[in-house]
Amino acid sequence: MLFCGIDLHSNNSVVVISDENDKVLYSKRHPNSLEEICSALSPYRAELFGVVVESTFNWYWLVDGLQGAGYSIHLANTTAVKQYDGLKHRGDESDARHLAHILRLGLLPEGHIMPKEVRAVRDLARKRMQLVQQRTVQILAMETLFDQQKGAHLSSNSIKKLTSDDIDRMGFGQMETLAIKANLAVMHALRTQIDAIETELAKYCRSNPAFALLKSVAGIGDVLATVILLETGSIDRFADVGNYASYCRCVGSTHESNGKKKGKGNTKNGNRYLAWAYVEAANFAIRYNDLARKFYQRKKTRRNGVVAIKAVAHKLARACFHMLKTGELFSVERCFT
Image (tube, rainbow, N blue to C red; front, side):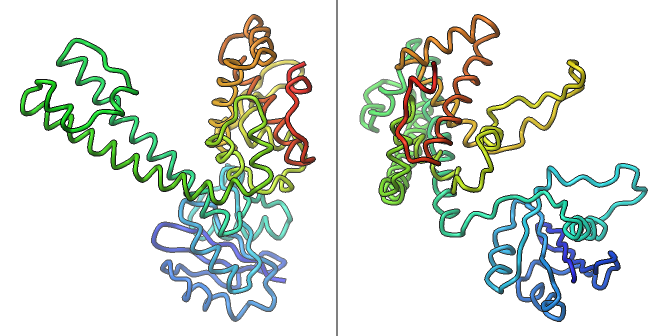
């Protein structure tokens, strides 16, 4: 039985194949070419137990390509892979060799490989979030310019309705007019693209029964339901509700021993998009739902507002897990009492 580790970089990959005794049978650096890497693996294919690829920013092409070629692929969670700190020398070859080694031992911390088609829709939702953030930058820039030049504040809702002719009638100087029209043009262009993406996401998500379940949750509307649905993927990949809450960054990362704090774990482990979605849902829930607001206020009196909001987000994440598992609609009483 053979084991392969690939240390993936932006323009090249180091491929190492080792046997059951960790003896290296193949080690070579290749350019990032699927054809060349498949050619390197081909002589060992019959005996390969699996191929480990690092979960770097550019893993899609390699994992999809090797899966398409019929290889058993494992995606390494790079933040959880630890090597012996006392190593005198580390390099790309030793990193790839270590990936093959922990695959052989059954100790590889694996990341989830979402199906390619589902991943494309999820990434489209992430693109929407990016464009919304960029649109907000344009709106804030125009708000600032109005404050500077007019000494009066114009709300974001009013700015969204402005046209180029409106700007001409406001009496700005030539340079200020050009600047604000540039922001306005970018804002409208972004809105067009956001609308197109939202239309496509709606076609995909609203036919999914889980979308309606998520929308029944206090604080969750179309946008948050879309994000939670796509970022969660198959709920069956989570062993229990604690794993899901941890993935959503809704649990603490403190290390304790004998009742004393011994340090902190990696607070960035998990999905930042789900973390954002549940905190947003928590803020809406305490604004519009009495039971959620009372729960928040009880938590706030004991700690502070930030911890209280995270507690509400944690409750909502746990509720969504059980709903997606069982198909039951949201019960605010069961969630907050």
